[in-house]
Image (cartoon, rainbow, N blue to C red):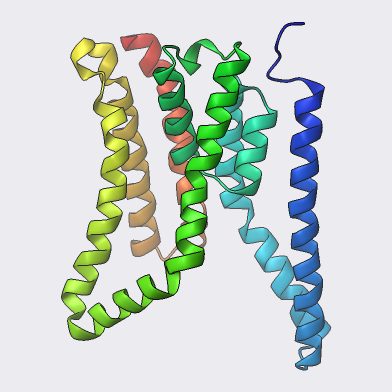
Length: 240
């Protein structure tokens, strides 16, 4: 029997885990609601909080859905659905899958048909992200304490340190964008798409700052992602 990345069994496994996570969410929502009532908060106030929170989760959800759609082209739907529903981000999942496939001498752009490649990618995507959970669980208090102490001693250097950490994370992904520029003009397509996304983010930032469009803060990321993805189609046809 041929391996299928969209097999029903995989959907069942992913569905069980996602259902468990959703159950946890509703459990803690229920406990938070009861605790708020014990503290004297009125039901209309709580309803407004829940409604506003639900509305503002739409924008991040769009980015997550885009990630699921992108990865499903190569890995099927169950695995991306599971990874991005529980704990994951496209900025990590796609590089992890690409690196795992490359180590086995294949490319996810061709689609994954070998179960060994698929299982390797799944393990890399899952085990790799677990390091963050362990670090947060075991060392978050010490890390936060160190950062707070640094800011108290020297506010300027504290801000520089945080900025340097963020830029270091961004730099880790820039290598993938510039990796193929030597192969010709088509190798510059990811670079051009990145520039389009950055330009859209700058436009959103200007609109937020100049015109005080605070609501746009939650939609700037999906807008930049959707705009860059839309622009990638004519760019690829023109240059690829």
